[in-house]
Amino acid sequence: MEGCILDGEHYLTPDSTNFWSPKKILYILMNKALTTTFFYVIFISPNIWWAFKMKQTEEKSIAYERVMDTAERLFARKGYNAVTLRDIAAEIGIHHTTVYHHVPGGKEQLYIDVVERNLAHHRQGLTGAIAGAPPDIRSQLRAVADWLLSQPPMDLVRLVHSDLPSIDPEQSERLSRIAFETMLLPIEAILRAAREQGVIEYEDLILAAGTFIGMIESLYAVPKRPAMKSRQMMAYEMVDILLNGLRPRKDERV
Image (cartoon, rainbow, N blue to C red):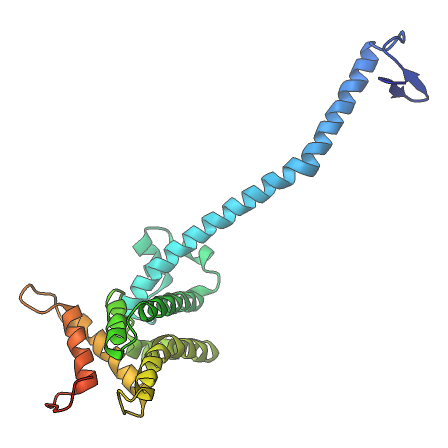
């Protein structure tokens, strides 16, 4: 019975007397409406909802990145203890309650997120700089210096002695370990490889790595003036001092 429409217990065909009656037309339209509604609810509505939620999440992520960028600048400039969420809001130009909305964990959680992001950035940058440099110790230390000078200063002394002691001890210990692994171990690995090759003899490689970072970071305190050497040139000379010392050497330079 092709083309039949079920109506209760009766089958109606186009030849039936009441097939095109208003009642039957209404019946057909209602069934189509229900079918369309069912299709929308099951297939289309969830997709719209997920698209809306994804857009909300993306907007929230962008807003939080903006808060983090501003917080990072203020923390670097003033230190953890001197910065408030109100300061961050004022720097962005928004009401402080908006910052609280994006930072439910408060200033401490924001600081932790900022430090983690910054260290992850340094880990990636240092790894790439070292991998892209020639294998000799001078070239690799110069590559590290170039990377550090291309970034805002870390101020590891304040980080270790002022900022981290002000937050939760467990988080402070964790961030200290990440900073050690990110900043010191790559340089220690360069020095260890050179020692294994017989190029250098010094034993305390972690101390040497920390000294090198301190030397490079100290260049941020040197004002930029036309008549002065560039920070990069000074950094390269510091690499030579670290490798060869200040005394005259009769043997071949490293």
